[in-house]
Amino acid sequence: MPKLLLCALALCLSLPIAVNAETLTSGVDVSHDQGPVDWAKVKGAGVDWAYAKASEGDTVGDQTFATNWPAMKSAGLTRGAYHFYVVGDSPKDQLANFTKHVTLEPGDLPPMVDVERKQHPQRRTAMIADLHEFLSLLKAHYGVTPIVYTEPAFWNANFDGSFSDYPLWVAEYGVRAPRPVTGWTGWTIWQHSESGKVLGINTPVDLDHFKGTLQDLKKLAVPGG
Image 1 (cartoon, rainbow, N blue to C red):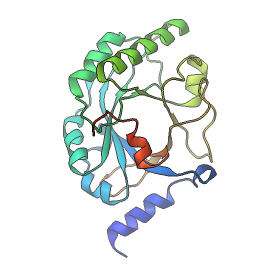
Image 2: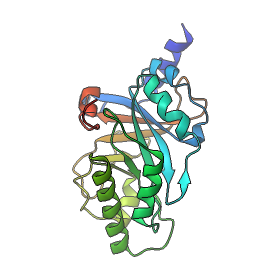
Image 3: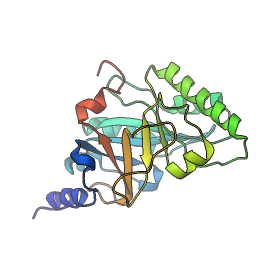
Image 4: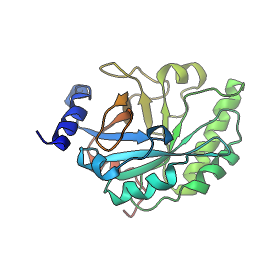
């Protein structure tokens, strides 16, 4: 059996059974942890869309983003960029850091904000207010609604139900369906594995399902693509 077909089959076998037989569209998300990525091979393995880490907090940039970003587009993947949110850093400074690295074009997916860690002590009310500010700033800058990425236990312990206007990207592994996240009645994207194997990526990688078709996903993108 050809190597490409074997890898594509391995990717399919690593995915959970489709939830309620819904249409699910496969994606990955990467950072510097994955090292160099051959995006043409990733596309050939059956991956339709991908996100790459661009920035973290108010100063850090991902050293692989400048290479990943154009390569994803060249390979024909629907692409998106994400920011690793740092609790306690200024929302305005985090916006400046992300926008310094990311210029979105028509057809690009909306920014994703990774909220999974409490890096600095901060009162819950301030955490909620700061995250609302950051998401509002992102939306105003790019003209699309950002996606919130989180893990159920962390979110439910630290945030509230006031973020339901933003699509939910939930991370939970080894389950048939992720647990509820306060504020949302369901998920838009589910990161169902952190140890996937995909041709073109030499390390374990996060695997994701979008609930819908690729055309449905593109409805979230920057208009004009």
